[in-house]
Length: 192
Image 1 (tube, rainbow, N blue to C red):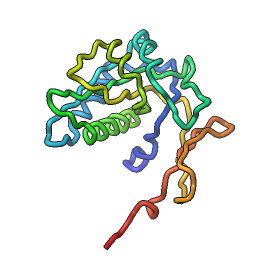
Image 2: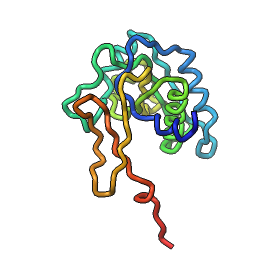
Image 3: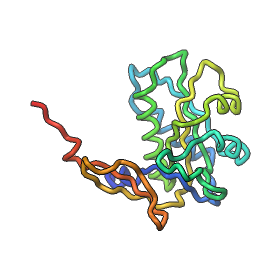
Image 4: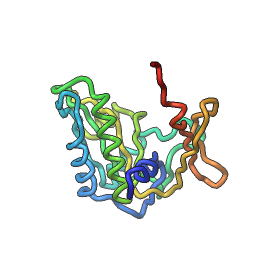
């Protein structure tokens, strides 16, 4: 797969094939990719919890919010829920700034997922208190996000838009998920 195709196929998938499990080894391989990416000051403060046991996935699911622009949609139904998740943590003993590192690592994990036939969704709207309790996460770690993973069970397309168009993603009558994206000429600036 060419890199451009990999990037354009790397969408936020929110519905998954419930009959296609994701193994602990697959999660480990995705996290290994994140170990090799750049890190601010090379501090490498990110840590991860893998979740692929069905009971733990079921317990984690109510802690996740799925699509802010789809207010009427409560999230994936039974049989379409993620088959695995990665909880990304920041080690406060190392740093208190994870913004750059977490984004690079999360996108690398998603690119690796797509390259291996999976898909995922980065979830930042999560119930951190319940997740901390569920996984007994010490206070020395901050919960940054959850990355839901599985074999995609939906079609997500990119719609190129003009600056005056809405950026709100939506589902059409056929259940196709549309993601508006600005074109390069609208984001490329020159001030000199």
